[in-house]
Length: 221
Image 1 (cartoon, helix red, strand yellow):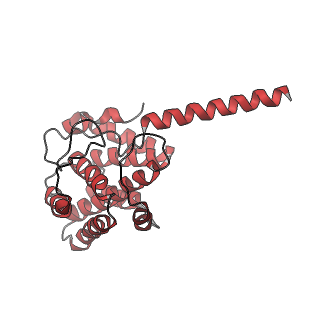
Image 2 (image 1 turned 135 degrees about the vertical axis):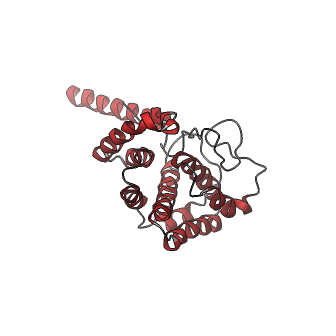
Image 3 (image 1 turned 180 degrees about the vertical axis):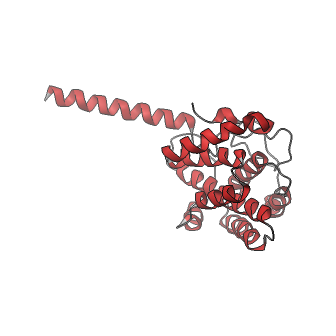
């Protein structure tokens, strides 16, 4: 019996430490804003990863997000814009559906491999960021305020943004910044093997991608 209690205490301690580590780190696509090197993104407040701009007119979210996701926008800037867009949109089922549908429509409308790669990446990364918001509902930590959880879960049902990100990488020819994004997605999904592969290939690109170099520390050693 004494051995049983000792084993139980050890298991509970390990679980507590694991939970504590997860709670501190938080969902990786949400809790660590990306350094865009001055590239434009959605308006944001001061004070942290979840500090939205309270004065922002969210009815402009759909048009503002699409305007920012230009062909020339760096991948890291796209990631930050989509992170912010997901947080803003999560408060409203109508905003979630409108923005998700617009990102999906850009895949169909893409007329070149480059445009299709960007559209696939944007739709996939947005979906995976929403997945992190859904996961956050189970964390005991400061969150996002109002979240339309029912609409969020309906939108995510059966979706897998990582598949679209993988297709975007194939079209872009192993873009290191997209590998960085895929590594973070793999970490969020707890796919260790995929994480190791994507992280290794992302690090290879640091020497020639200054913006990636500014963000690469977000990958665990």
